Length: 303
Image (cartoon, rainbow, N blue to C red; front, side, top):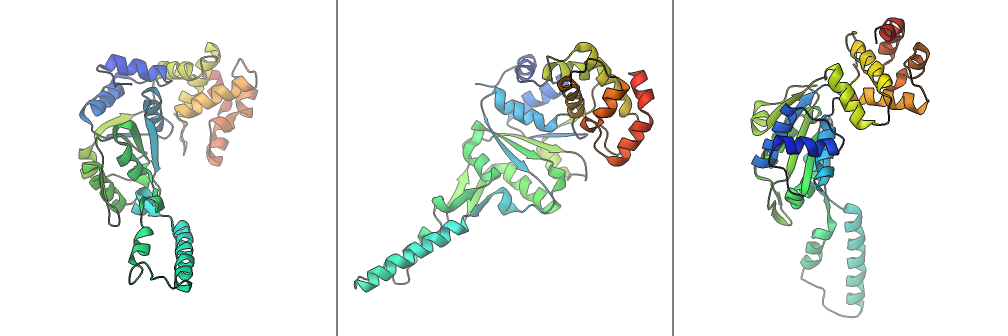
């Protein structure tokens, strides 16, 4: 499927995929698709940053390739690695073959077995990691670089180089260059500040918590079978939870989970008992749980 030419078309495609994007986000994504520029999405946890890449890949028939960043991630884990176990098996097979040749009086292949060594670093021993896979797939892929802020400064600099030219040099194989760049979505929860060089390379969009009306629309898109009254009550309660001094305020993902959980239990109203039984769907920290339980009556009455 070709990418749409207007913001309205893209918004409609995303909604068909279950993602309700506002005009600002849809405009940024359209520019990214048109200009072949990466997009950096920042925002609180659970507001739908990762979901953007998933839905883009799904609705446009592209392959989703995800690079999950974490502290200590290395370039080899992001690019490629050699299949050492398979190489060892190949060495044993070659050694057995050479021993058989020697026993039969045949000359070994190469004075120092060089052809055999070359065989150990061929394409069949190369393990593709997300970045190499994305380079090979080109515009047939959506590359999600998730939580880039969790990686260190050196890895961020390496990413900048890869995103600049979309080519990777492998000494034993050669240079692999993308015919056309994939769609690239980077996400950050702002656990640390990213460098200006990476930010300048990307289009930028901040995804914040939605208004109550917008959040109710999002839940309706993702959970169309949920009762409207229940959805409204849950959204109002979550909005009040975000006003508390919580270590981990609930995102939109938690709102959807709460509505889904209550639906599984057959609840049609957000009562104090139902809320208390299902708080684990929306509150994910022990201290936060104590604080919410202390204020639960007020939260439910105001919802």
